[in-house]
Image 1 (cartoon, helix red, strand yellow):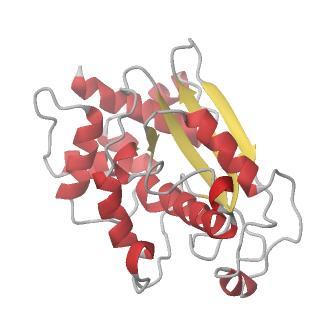
Image 2 (cartoon, rainbow, N blue to C red):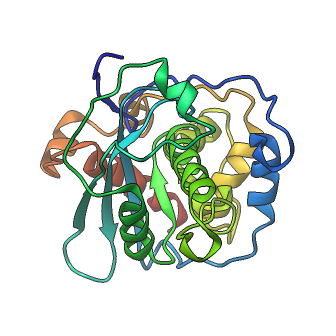
Image 3 (cartoon, rainbow, N blue to C red):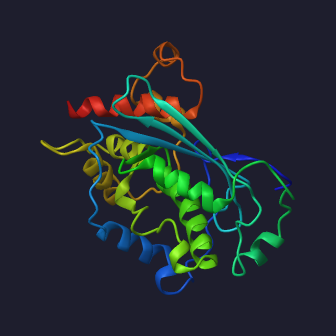
Length: 251
């Protein structure tokens, strides 16, 4: 990748290796376990987090997370923006290092160690749902791999976050999934929450390709003037505007 930076909130492709990882390491097994998690989250009408990542490339197995961006929509009048810059050093472990060695990675960069970054991420997101475009295909995939590498390299007492308990599929609300559901004629049912609707869309759709945020804006008839009136400064604010528009379907 030669130092190329990737913003996963707007990338349109994720390179995923064959599903030949045994047992709990298998993404299919992980997704099933994630749906079985019973933890409850704060209702999105009371708050949520828009999630974005910057990575060193598009492959969650061999690329690294260099920045986590969070837009907290909570009880305060204005959204709160958090950027967690992460050092690339120390993110790989003995199992993943051969993959990293095949790609040039910056020898140093600014940021805190991955263990500190995961702790700050965990403390900041609290019990909120995590929202974003292609957030399951991209952002969750990268976070899960980062957490797995941390778990393999840390003793039990030092483990900060668990990919199944803390990052289950059901915790994520994917704008792309809802876009596909609406495009296929899948409309919210009476009393259905937006989180449940997002999950129903994902179980209904067969096309798992990523979606451009511009396509979703057109589907929701968000004109350029409407977007500009909100003065979005980055992808997270645009995605928050899209989520707020989806939310109107549940009024």
